[in-house]
Image 1 (cartoon, rainbow, N blue to C red):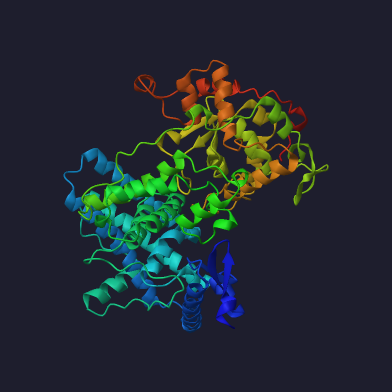
Image 2: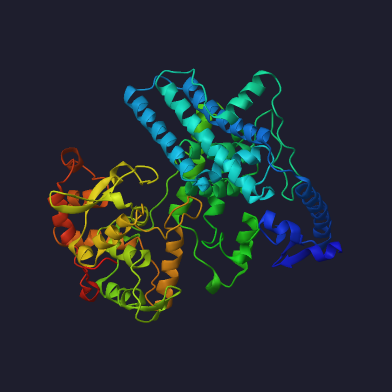
Length: 583
């Protein structure tokens, strides 16, 4: 195959393309390799394409020759993970002052909960919960996730969960004054013994890669591309970030390196932070999704966007998104300052304007829109489970039926509903309520999200308690077992979110600014319009009460909360769906 056939012109920039051999496609997880050649000159593009072609040949050969993960390699992975987290934790101790007792007690509980969560994930074989950390530790040893078979990858994730239990318990022990914690995991013990005897297993040799290696470290200090990867792994492993936040931070770090280069953190200045802001504030809001921007640098994206007719240009990213990028970088720099790896946080002190008031940032469902939504086939009858938008006689009372109804009659967040267990539906003081808690594997947004939400009488008339009882009888733990974890943070509502958007488009009730979270705004607004005290609304929805009120109003009684919930009147007749029969 000639080199000419391996590069194509997209817009004004040449790109390398090469089909992946059939025997490696499943292992790599894609059909072809694609990369920007970052040039508009055909001669330069041809040279770079030839270099990438040779590199891809080396990659294919290495993949075909790479053996399965050995137990020794797994042990090395575990030790890398263990050392990464514990070393970072101890460096923080050595560079900070005394730890207040209340902080210490809180961290003991935090790491205890982390150990329980990892143990539960291991017992239930939820290996995907360790996917992010596994990828980072594998990369540290020069092994890409795509280099492994599904069985090898599952084995590595299992090893990370096992190590995560020991890591959490070791840090918890340190906050209890015990620095002699002995790990129980066999893989970790094996590696520690090897290290003590001087016969540690060397890391696997990395295969030749199509992607260029990060810029080499200066003066013995790792560049941002390496430091950022380790930092994200630590944030996830310690529970400071969820996987979605870490994934977003990964994109942020790549953008910053693209704009300002890949250097040690101490080599950047506040001018670099300003330059980064100046660039990303001009990015179109579809730069991460539209095919025209795929594999382009920031400068190329800006040029491609500016070349479009004004009528076809997307609006720019919001200040909220710019602030999110700066927040991720600020967290990295704050940690670096604490470890004396940077002189100052160059991202501190920047101001970001709010384009809209908080109350206007998301629309609420108007009563007329709710009437249109609940008059669509999900609630009036569809043809089949696979044809939910086609009118018919079948009403399936699954998550697609219940989630919007529960949201609008409770103000609960989507993931709070998706992760409900049968045991979370309880009764006290003659009031049926939903117990929103953070018992693993459940996760909540913050401390105020833990609460009790009375079940609206309309949900009871619609058969929600009967739906729960049916799952209780068949020993089903979750109320909506059809939901599977997905996305960077393994959220149960990941696929539902995409489906709900498609469904609303298909049935003609889609409007920009209106989404599932808008049900929460609707419930809050309806309670407010009915005269419910703001503090009680906050207790129902799990918001922190602002101002002096928070000092004196600690919680509301169940009857108070029930009275507030019952003021939610959406103005839609759902009596045709009322039932006393188990769904």
